[in-house]
Length: 324
Ligand code: PEP
Ligand code: MG
Image: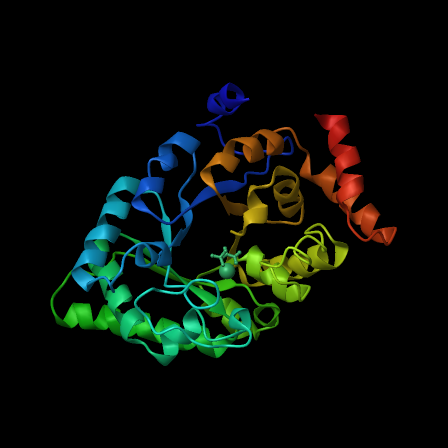
């Protein structure tokens, strides 16, 4: 199988019906970067910056962060890297930060909520990223945005950081993209203005699914209770695709499910044109997509929905057995 994937490494993930799906990889440490070439990923669709904060025992300095991010951009050799700003709180606690006692950490003070309430670290990180780019294009993504105002406030921090660098006479990125992760159902219902303003959206399916079904992603008793290919969830994802299409907003899916070939195929059939996954998943996902006619798969999904099935998985699996 490895050889089969190696032979399509530099080929596009183009389906039989001629649709291209961009396959990107998730990363978090410098050590992940060699996989960019090895996997054939088009870029890094999610760089989880908190990992570099979690592997040390004191808060990194801005100059250290900037050097790290510059090495990431160097290693990416011009491929797009989506830097997600610090996503801590909940299950990710920095050893050098005072732990918060919260009854429901997953619903608590985490990610952009911390970034906006105590902006010191976020500001340092944005400045480090701008300096690391040294004039190269820069892509920033804010985690766990639940409402338009949070995106506006985070974006304003980015604009301020850029202005500060300009005033200091430092080079600023030739192009900046600022996006948000859609991880709470609320953001799917944000005003049209949000969809028009945001440069791109990426679905954090791990969190989005846990909040959609109210099922803790860390709790073994309920974690697998609801299928990702559950009709309600797919219909919800479809509504997000429609809103993004209507406002011409670039949309990707970067949760773990994007790396499961059957799920990835269904997402593509629902209209996703960009997926980000662990590097080892790129080969298998690409291999399946290249054998598929998404219009047929979409019909299979729609028919299962019309039959009021709970999950489209059985119908999709039966269909896939006929094409493989
Ligand atoms: C997600 O929630 O799907 C996601 C990509 O973010 P994380 O897994 O880091 O919470
Ligand atoms: Mg998440």
